[in-house]
Length: 560
Ligand SMILES: C/C(NCc1cnc(C)nc1N)=C(/S)[C@H](O)COP(=O)(O)OP(=O)(O)O
Image 1: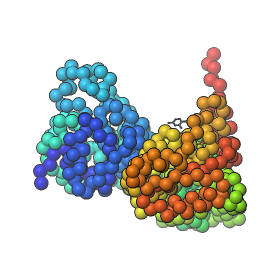
Image 2 (image 1 turned 90 degrees about the vertical axis):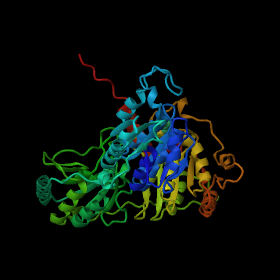
Image 3 (image 1 turned 90 degrees about the horizontal axis):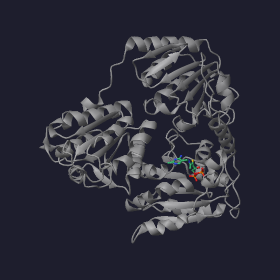
Image 4 (image 1 turned 120 degrees about the horizontal axis):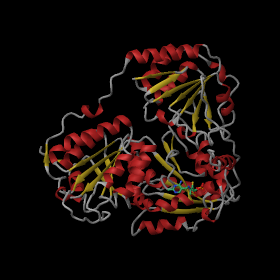
């Protein structure tokens, strides 16, 4: 078969397991979209805008390993950079953004092009993309396409970071060489056995002398593809295991050693004491940012910490590199001896919220309790930035249930388009979204795409009439919003024949009724507008908000 640039890209995407890609049309990418459509193993899914398109690709990457979005030059790509590149970079997700670009003859021509800033130099987009990707290439010659496409895909998959491709609008249908074996994109770097053995020995000796061993799992265990090996180590040590908030569900919560979320003053009951009293704390893929450390107050460091990163190990002031995390954890599991001290007399946290009477006004607790009842091993729960974070942290998850959050980038509105992408990537799972009313207003229109593609996502729209987190951190008129009739939106989004369902829940009984209807609605999304009082938030949010506000208010250090 003969290949052109667009068909080469399509073949490579198919080979790395992409079945669906997301797009917003624009005259710089139409011919490219045609080439991608020609590949019958790739489905082209459309979004309402490029911000959502990028988030959909990011969500698809969460469900499927990698994601792709195709946008038009400048007006599309710059909007999509926020989600497909910045957000994916922060969250360690392999997302490829492909932007149609100016005709190859225009470079250096002095021509002013539409959709650009009006300057005759069009490099600004590539310069921006380079700041938030692990690889970025422009294709203006068909002959260079195979090398550049392979380079961005190989780097994206290896680094678990986003990549960027810009393809001139007159090049996508130009003939180019055929792709060779996909193994060239998937080959892993060779392990340095000497360094691996030294790291394992040093770590095993460090643990041998310890009494109170605790494991703390962080979000980078996912991009390191080492979740299974973390369980292996926990099984062998028999010690307590806690997770950081952004790693909720990255360790099975029904595991006998699981002891909840470590998040400083807002940890699960008992988790902070376990972590703080450990004489050997094994941190696996931590991300110690300001929110995770509650304003730098909860950041375990020092000689009692064995820090395991995706690409290195730090133990007793010695640093080892040259091997993947999963090999290190697996080899360490083979040589350590059981350390069960920290699981004695401690138990996993349990969400104890008594069921409200059906006629009782809906509360945050009752809403959380009813959502928790819905969780199954094949559930994915998208948790939007907001009090939804804290509600999810207190839920007990069945093994296999996945919580998806965006705690590093924290772009409100992420959960709707990312939840759409996740549902496209894993349609057989039960896809649920918990999203506040403030966040929802940024990306609401993507619910229309869930209707278009008949995805039975259930959206819990937390209608508390404002920006709950911001109110807890620092209140002011800027934290209040125009209160939409969210359930009624579904009628608008349905057009003539959509199956979207919009329901309002003001009492516990109405919420239970709405969930039943949502579960029965297999041909489209169900939005349940959960009406709760404005000041009804978790205690954790209030405490955490106060600490974060204090941290933000630190006075400038005055240098005399
Ligand atoms: C405004 C903002 N953050 C600032 C912000 C502003 N703009 C973007 C894109 N991302 C952000 N995180 C945040 S967390 C709101 O409390 C979200 O409100 P809502 O969705 O209603 O949830 P809660 O009521 O549970 O907080």
